[in-house]
Amino acid sequence: MTPDLMRAGAETRRAAEERAAVATAAGRSGGRQASWSRVATGELDVAHGAILYLDDITVSFDGFKALDRLTLSISAGELRCIIGPNGAGKTTMMDVITGKTRPDSGRAFFGSTIDLLRLRENEIAEAGIGRKFQKPTVFEHLTVFETVAGMTDEETERTAELFLSLEGSHSLVVVEHDMKFIDALTRGRAGRKVTVLHEGRVLAEGSLADVQGNDQVVEVYLGR
Ligand SMILES: Nc1ncnc2c1ncn2[C@@H]1O[C@H](COP(=O)(O)OP(=O)(O)O)[C@@H](O)[C@H]1O
Ligand SMILES: [Mg+2]
Image (cartoon, rainbow, N blue to C red; front, side, top):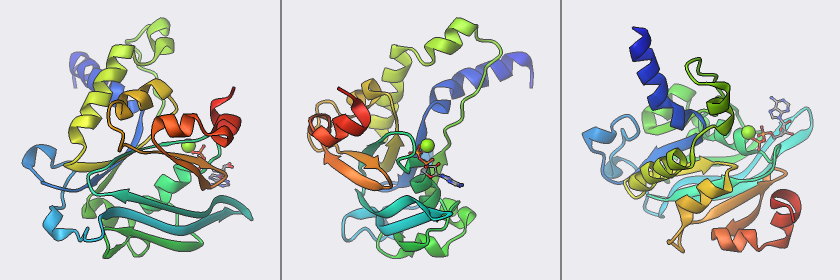
């Protein structure tokens, strides 16, 4: 690739590199969205409304429970934001969903029939679950200043618009620390839920306003 092409590619990727997102297929599966959506609704049984269901998942590392009987359900077409302090288990949860880590116990289903715990990583990807890793990267063509400011407010807003445009046709789980971004994703739609993870479990779930007003969430994550 020429330096120009590489620069262009880096620019395009830049917004997305900052985010960790799992997108699962749901709803119509058009060609445009092929990279995220290989499974048409007809092939995936979402009869119970849930496209992703984690039930009582425990993951231990040398006796320490990174996930502690985590139960979580994502509806077909939903855009769910997951927040929580460092060490809450967010990455481990993504690892379980995508087959990178096997839980000690619990169940994980894609739709109501695909048992994720029986599939290998590549089979999970082929079933329609994609993942964008959290991957801090230094782009050499950016100045130190540009690198430190990270994404501009406008870029954050545009990324939020992109995610919102996928809602409904895709199901998305977004792990994010930037509360401005979470606000942009949940603003104006009371139904959009935010889940707060803490110590491997769901500490709170509800609208952004609900969780922001939750004393325990303020205590462990948001601060006073
Ligand atoms: N491979 C591992 N070995 C040992 N401990 C781990 C491993 N992966 C994660 N942990 C621990 O599990 C907990 C949850 O980690 P993680 O899922 O990365 O949290 P988060 O992404 O919410 O910051 C942390 O205490 C972390 O140190
Ligand atoms: Mg993490």
